Structures are given as structure tokens and as C-alpha cells.
Length: 453
Image 1 (cartoon, helix red, strand yellow):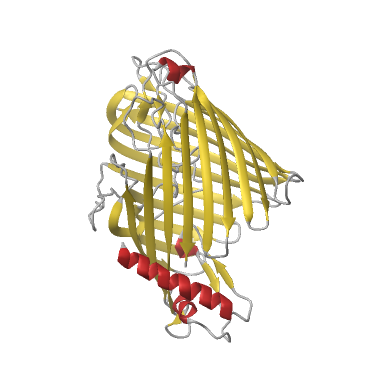
Image 2 (cartoon, rainbow, N blue to C red):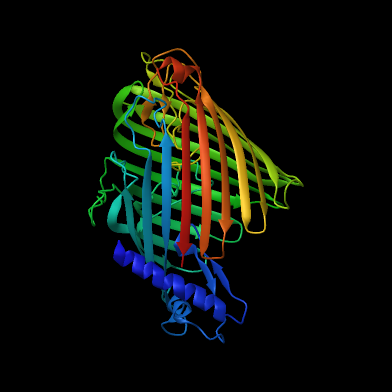
């Protein structure tokens, strides 16, 4: 950890030094997936060591670059399991280091390597997303046949659409990676992606992540089309196989298709992002029939700052209607973001109905967000699931209302390299949790400081 800190400190100094020396117009735009970084440094500018490492020429049309990030988080819970009697950790500290190299060759070949070290202290019961001492987060080769077609083979973080079903899982300490083969077509209006992928199993030690464990896999075809005006659609088919999957109704092999349509864009000042997914397949001897529908609209307002907006999200997600019939109705959220309803991460996308109004505003380098969520079980016969889609709270009573959640988030972007964020959430148990013996208010806070270089 000390070595990583020294490396990060050196890059931090180089980044600030390079910025101070800049005379021309430059761009440092760091993507969520760092292979998508956009870095522009004028060729006639006097470069410091950091900027030289961002653009190392290997010939007329070949180049090599280095970069990474360090993220520190302090996370605290009060009544994490809605029960003050439960012995639980109150506060823990997370450190995540990512370091990558990216090479582009003139023949269309591209190699991206990203090391990850995710560490945690003061927490006793670790989840798979908490710790990975050292491993490859991404390691892939891409060949571009021309400006439109490319082939990728290797390990990659993936986000499709709004991340509803397949996401990078940026909130937790360890990102989600897939070992995959992918073929992609892309032009100004169309992106068509097809891949076969196996999720990487985190070992939490040094280079001990398990690759190509075929107990779980998926095949995907995903089409994004930008139409005339400001409207776009995603149409997709995802086939996932998972051995020994556990739902509230039992454990069996789960093989299912997810067929989805997403419609997003803007109309006048109104922004919208709506999605429908239907699932079919088999769960052991049961036939799968599950679905979800989501609506999200947002409207800008002149209140508390030039970047203010009010929004409303609502979604219905099917749950199983009976444990004794030949049908499973529990929706599988596949690989959603870990912080589905904020970093508090207690409720996941299965057997759920929620209403989620929110308000965002910003001024200069500050942004603020406030939201409220009310949760109900869609089916009284099914349990409540966590973000990893495990049965968090089994169905042991007939109550439907899960609880209220109130949250706020404040962030400050120091510059292109440094950002700070503070998030807090409070969940008040509803009738379902109260009748399950979980009647204490949950309080959660997380502070994040991140440096990208």
C-alpha cells in the first residue's frame, strides 16, 4: 500500500505541475472506463514528465499512454441490518488503486492493461466486492478492421445503456469484470455489440481471481440507434446461464432470456429514460415469466443554481406469485450497479415497486442532490433482495410496504484530476421490515475522495 501511495503522490505532483505549465488549449477528460479517456495536449507545448507519459510517440501513428486513479472512501453504518441488537461494524475505510497502460499501433491493434488493488480496513465480514489485493481489472486486445468494425478479446468492464442490467459496478470497492470475446460495429448513429462473457470471480488475494468459471455466463446482442432529433433507442437480447441460483422459492439452475427496449432522449426541455424488459426461460423445472418497466423523467428549473432540475423515477419489478406452481416470476437484474438506490445498497432490483422523486442542483464546481424513495414488495409471496440479488429479507409476513429512504449527496470537483463527495442516506423501516423484527432506523454515510491521472 505504501508503494502505491508513493506512485500516486508522484503522479499527483506531475499532474499539477503539468497543468501549471500549460500555455495552449488542452483536454483532460477521464472516462468511467479509462480506455475511453480523451487527452489532448498541444504538440508545441512544453511538457512536464506527466504529460509526456500521457502521450508517448511510438512512430507516426502509434502511441503509448499511462494513467490511473486512487480512490479513498470512509463508510459508516448505524443499524446496518435494521436491528440495534445485531453486532455490526460501524465504520470502515476503503482504498482502491487502478493503474493502466494503453497502446495504439498504426495497424489497428490496441492493447489495454489495468491493474487493480482494492483494500479495506476495520471491516470483519467481507463481501466479494470489498477486497482484491492485486489483480487485473482489465486486460484486453482490440483489433480495428476499419473505422466501423472492431474485435475485442480479453477481460473488460462493461456498461450497457444506463447500466440497468449490465454495469461496471463503480460504487463498491471492486469493479465487475468479464472475460469475453466481443464484435462491435459503430458509426455516427448506430452501435451494434455482440459478445459472449464469463464474469470474473474475485479471490481477494494477489492474482488469484478465477477466470472462465462457466458456472455463470451470458451471451448478448445490444443495438443502440440514435434517430433524427434527440431520441434514441436500445434494443437487446441477453441470455444468461447460472448454476445453483437461489431465489425465495428455492435453488436450481437458472437459464433465462432478457428481451429489452429502452427509449431515451429529450423533448423540448424534458429529458426521459424509459425501459421495459421481459424475461423467459427455465428455473429448474419451472418456467420463467418475469418483467420490469421503468420510467424516468427530468425537467430543468431555475432554482438554487443554473444546473437545477426536478426528476421522477418509478419502476415496477415482478416477484414470484407462488412457491408451489410451475412458474417463477422473480425478475433477475443480472449484473446491475451495486449502488442501485444510492451507496447505502440495501434494496436490489427484484420484486419491487418504488417511487423516487429527486432534485439536483449545482453552481460552479459544486453539485448537490436530494432524493426520496418509497419501496413496496410487488408480490407478497416473494422476499426482498439485495443489490447482489441474494434474498436479503425472506417473505415471512404478508406486509407489502418495505420503507422510506431519504438521501442527499454533495460533490466538489477541485479540477480535472481531483473530486470530493459526501453522501448520506436514512432508511425508515416500513410494515414488512417491522413485522420481520427489523424495526430500527438505518443511517449510512460515505465520504469519497478520488484522484485521477
